[in-house]
Structure formats: C-alpha cells, structure tokens
Image (tube, rainbow, N blue to C red):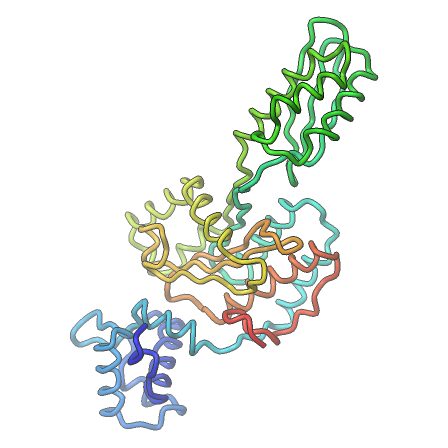
Length: 367
C-alpha cells in the first residue's frame, strides 16, 4: 500500500468505516444520504459524496451501478481489517461456550480440532474448517508389536496423534518374547527417525541385535519406510457448508457448485493451508486473514478466509478457520477465532484454560 493510501485523513477513515460497517450489516450499497443519518458523521451530504468519490478513485470503494451507492473493494476491506476494525467483546454466552470446550478433558488432537471447528461454525454462522497440516518431518514416535498368531505380528506405529498398523508374516513360528525384543530394538534404533535416517548400517545393527530372528528386521523396516514415506499427516474438515446459502454472495448456483467442488478437493486446500501455517513463526500469535483475490484459490475471490494456527510447545499442529463472504463480520470472527485457538493452544501446552480476556489485539498481536 503506497503512502497516499496509508495516510487517509481521519474524515475519510470515518466515512470508509461507516460504509463497510453498514455494508457488512445489510449487504446493500451505501449512499451519502444513508451516512448523513449516522450521528458520528457530522458532514454535509455534498462533503460525504466528495469523500466517497475520492475513496473510490483511491481504490477503497466500488460503485456497482451508476446510480447506486458504494460498496467496499478488497483494498477497502484490507484497510478496514488492518486499521479500522473495532475490538469485539465476546458475550457471556459465547465465553461460556468457549470455556466449556477447553475445559473438556480431551486428549486426542483430532477430537479437539473437530469440536473447536463445530463451535466456530455455530458461533459465527459461517463455514468453519479444521486443518491438521502436513508434517514436514515424518517419524514414528513409538513402536509396538502384537502377536496375532505364531506366524503373524502386527506392527503398531504411533505417528503424532495417529496410529498406523502393518502385518508382518514369518515362515517359521515366532515366540511371544521375540516380538517384545523386536519392539525394544525398534524403539531404541528407529524411533523419531525419518525413512532417510534409517540407513543400511542401522538396519545391520538391528539385525545383530535380533540374533537368529534377524530375518524379521528387513520386512519390518520395509513396512515402516513405506508407511512414513506415504504419510503426510495432512487433513482438512468442514462444518456448516450449508451456511453459505444464507448469504447472497453464494446465490449464483454455478459459483456455489464451484465452491462445493473446492471443498471436495481437500488435497489442494491441505497443501495450500499447510504451507501458510508452516510459514507462521513460533512466536507469532496473529490471526491470518485472506480477502478475495488474496486467497491462493481462484474460486475464493469473493470470499474471505480467516484462520489461526494452533500450536503445541510452539510447533504448529493444526488450525481453525472460517470461510465466508468478503462482506464478513470481521470483528466478531477475528475475536472468536483468536480466543478459541488461543484457548486450545493453552490447554495443549500445559492443560490450563485461559482467562479469555481481550487484552491482546488479534490482528497485530500487540497489547
């Protein structure tokens, strides 16, 4: 944004904010006559029209029809989100809902994300998403082996919050204690190692540890490498897709079908959002907002995506987001996503629910 656009006069800011607030509320173009009824704008209709014309020339407003009022442009929404949006104070009922979620003694990340997503959709009346981003470094945290019968072992691999299993068959009977020994060797030698780090010298070392049952090591390591090279951990879920039908921006059935098709192409969204989440530094506490054509997916050029990463000990493990029209109730959505994700992050870190205050600006991360 150039210096001219950064240095809007206070009068222009007041008029731009009033137009965006009104358009978010009723979805209609806003004219100068409507603004003269705003008690905070003590200017004549002619002055307001001149300021609106200049705001349009600067790219903050658009005029859909010659005789109509103005609506915000993407640039207008971006300036609004960055500089003008009011702090939204959550209601007592909303705070109570959030508190109930984080006080629920849940341990599985998937369950936490899914419940947070459902609550976000309910409290904002937009479509909510829960993202578990792709893992950049995939390793097995822990190995277990279960003896199915004397010829078959079940290899159990714990990867983050997910469990993967593979069957390993032997040509000769395998005593129960051998399975226990193999699990011990795997946890000592192969746990928290990527497929590339499980080298031939390491494999040979494990074979020596297994003695006469060294033949089990090779098929087990093959199963491990196949599993972790084919597993990226990424997943995305949606809640309240039908809520889009509440907004005129999605009344066009062709456009709605394209949006629904996008929700079906989950791999594309997982890839894009995982990259965005991965770029958020460990110290960042900001809500991410993508307005219209800022979205990397073309069909979302009339939509806004608001999301924030959930972290465990500073590492991104998921994200909760809201998808809706660019005419979104930004102050409410930003406050909701910020409070919700901060609460979940706090619980994941130390099990202590937050106080749910509004002391920190969710967009800038500053007090």
